[in-house]
Image (cartoon, rainbow, N blue to C red; front, side, top):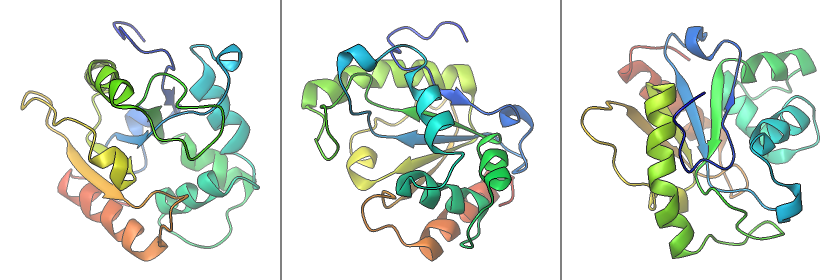
Length: 181
């Protein structure tokens, strides 16, 4: 990837992102990372996905995997891995929100994240952006008309997300973008 000015945590991009099973490109947009600065590096997001999305035990990733699969049954490790190969994942805030979860990003963090996000969208050219949580939804600026995208917002997987409305919302957005769940 190139021309990603301001991006401290490079997005995870699945091997099949550009030729996904959905028939369109799907960018999953998370809010922020938590941790200590010594843990960071440009590949931090990629390592988190690889360490947490492919195996059971991480509720956030297990729930999100099921939404992306359009199913609620327990996925095999192969299904988990395969699901994540068809999407990209990027955390909007480009610095640690805090050392532990449930810490809200500051106004300055939200503002500083807008330009790097725009660069990521220009680079990845998603057709659908799946926004995780209302707080993030309320803090992302609209994209310029030159970057047409179908937006989809669901309740955050760690915040009481229900499968049926989330899967329906993603399926609807994929359909509007010319894809299928």
